Length: 428
Image (cartoon, rainbow, N blue to C red):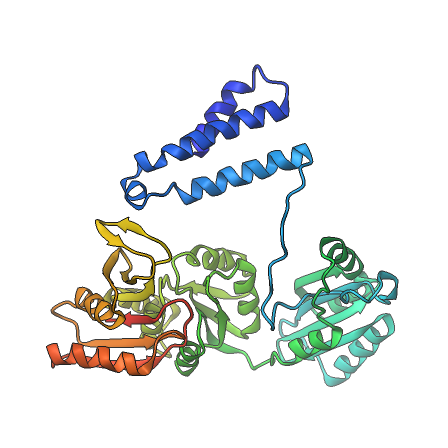
């Protein structure tokens, strides 16, 4: 779709001087190619859909044309959850821009690099910040100082910080500008992240003594998060239903761990790229990305870590162990379709492996059992069933009994994963 649009654009450029006409023709060509994608990819034809990435690209181009034409787009604000995202910076509706006394939310970390930073220095630094702003946070340990202040002159805070050491993770937000943008974008009351909440967030992030190695993983579900915590993970990034955190989310997690080496388990193939991007942007820590594509692989990788081994040895062992685990998920179909020759009706249960749909059925227990059979090999020794929000321990035990009844040499474990979307995660 992109290639078709590019080739059409190249033909039109020499003879077209009208941007609207030019874009209209390019989009028409892209749409025609999009409609042909089922003929290009048999899997699309079988499912009765066009290529989703191509459709997304066409939608972006249509948005550009609409903007060029000044076309108003009807939209509704996304309904946020009760504990929806907090907003940084200035207050929500009801607080006027002129009521914001200090306009710049300023944050940075001072890297002491061995320099002495006494309690007297900390008191002096806080007093200085109090003279130029409010909402002060100044938390220190032997290696670094975390700083947060609302001020009208961020440069003064930064200059003072430089007198103690090198600065990293500098962030300055214009709270008045953010406030105006929120008022313009929505008549609904914006969610306010007050200075008190900012203080609480920073103060609740303990500055722990430096340690050799730390761990980050992406997870969804309280049960799974507890499992990772028990295995030694320092920071768990809640992936939610999409399991799709940003590079910035991962960078922030890296900053929260006071360690020389950080291991990251993305636990989703879509997050590996973001994790590697965060690795390239991290300045003061060695970051090792273990390319885990799902939760069971992440758990397997953590089990393989050996304290005292070099980062290179652990990376090799943790990565090689990923081939020893076969993973599956059980969910349901949101519409009628045909994939890999399997007729699937809306509401059917589906057992998925990393590669394909292994099982389809009306009964969730039978579908899950069939999925596990497809994942088993002659060398399989342990099956772990993680039941999610929509699954149940009772059902999981029924599945386990069927598997054990057919193969008494297999060990089957049941864990409360608490994950959304998927009834069960299966690890073999």
